[in-house]
Length: 185
Image (cartoon, rainbow, N blue to C red):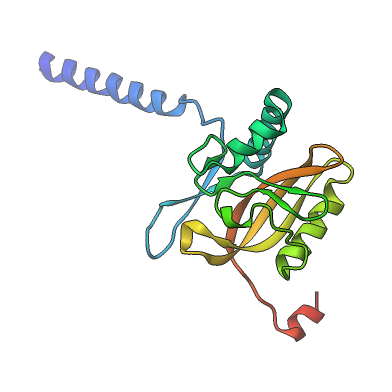
């Protein structure tokens, strides 16, 4: 009887210890939203706005520390420190010429102001960054999903009067509205 009672008390203490330990674990500092898809449940990590801003801010600090030339080399490096999954730094002049784009290196040196949606995106971002920084939502091809068009939140920052840089996070499929739905907004 004493052995059974002692075993029960030890099991009870162990159980309480485990429950208490589970309630006092530290929460992660970074927010990552997991989005499940039919193809690959739980594999798509969507990044928080705070992480996006911190990523762009780290690129701005890199420019300040190493200068424009070295920074652009690093931003254009597809294996460099400024490409991390869907996050990558892009850079443009205020006239729309691409200075850095590690996912589309063929666009570096190309003025994209007349490229349809890209030109609209550039004009919007240029207006945002004239006074510092800002967010913009665009539709863009996601390289992680076979270049499928997706909605993307971008954050852009002015470096100086000649150029600016940014990055973005994909937020899901493009939602197109028919004209009657668009009129009701």
